Image (cartoon, rainbow, N blue to C red; front, side):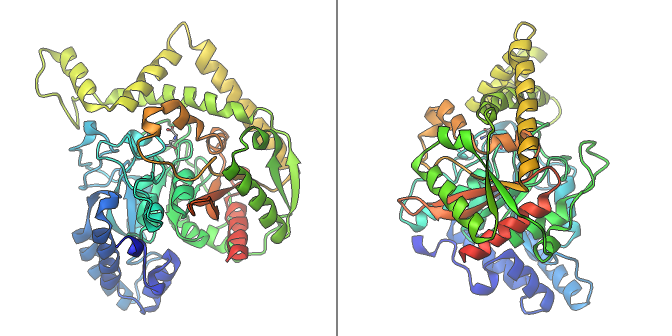
Length: 488
Ligand code: GLN
């Protein structure tokens, strides 16, 4: 059975093919949903889903069939997708991977998911994640870890899919959904995409509304997507991006329609490779990806420009101050009063708050609330939070300078392939260090995509990141697509 994981008939093997087959009438929405539901069933031990919504998808598929036949098909009519469980979905359990929301059924829909449904997509289920998207392995989830399907295919039973959007990445890798929604605060889409061998992209900060996503660190959080190809990712992003009056940090897209960008000649002449971080993070696997990056850049006709970004390495510690500070504030709302878990026994109101939070949050969430609260406290604010904001500004400036010399930048998505489950959870600092290549992108609000370009000694996938200046998401997907085609 292990070797069947992720197998799909050719016509269902990418989201693009599913969409095109549905639009042309060669595929029927009911059969499409059935095919993915079968894989969800076969791969249940992967634990990719917290909640499955097959019945709802089947009902939707019947309606989609009518629209397709009636010539009223919308862009994603009948295309099934999986959604990370930190997006609020009306009437469907939405837990953020936390005990404190284990029973939370939202009465409203996040903006990006409502855009998916309005374009005809169907919900297959809600995927597993680290609690409140805090983690890199899915092990901080109240619902247990997800298992990496790429590992299972190699007979490696116990590898992390990465995180925090590990359930979404695994669902796409295991052929349980043609595409999936994730969120990326410091790498939670790009790193699991790398670990599972799929494509994952976070767009420029602000291109997707954050409304209805359970907040982790609001100045860094951004919705994004997974697919099997760059085009899959472009198709999904085109539907979910755009300004939303409910999120004042959201904005109109300043770039081309992304799928169109793949078919439009676009000038991409120079790609940057940052020098210092390459030398400092010279793991065997990272070096393999750096070299592959250079090879692919040449192959698609780009000149390589080495740039100096000496402060890039400080993005990581600064990120963990800023993200945790914002988390400590965002998570203050979970107090047992309005929704979610409430302690069963308590003496008075304050005791109810305390017990609810003590029992409702997991260890990692508590660690982060405490560290973030400390960083924001009166005596330490200047030393930690303010300093981290200064570092953030310097990192953003270094990117700006680099993008004066090059159109885009290349970097590995992670220092290594997927690790064993059970290791990172015991050594949080080591886990944080694994985010070194992804967090700078969030700190500067840039678009970044990860696509599989190599494998490590075990055969596990390694992802390459293509990073662009803000609002050049179209160039990012265009270069990623060229690399993907050059690899094929
Ligand atoms: N691993 C990082 C963290 O734990 C990033 C998580 C994310 O992007 N949501 O903060």
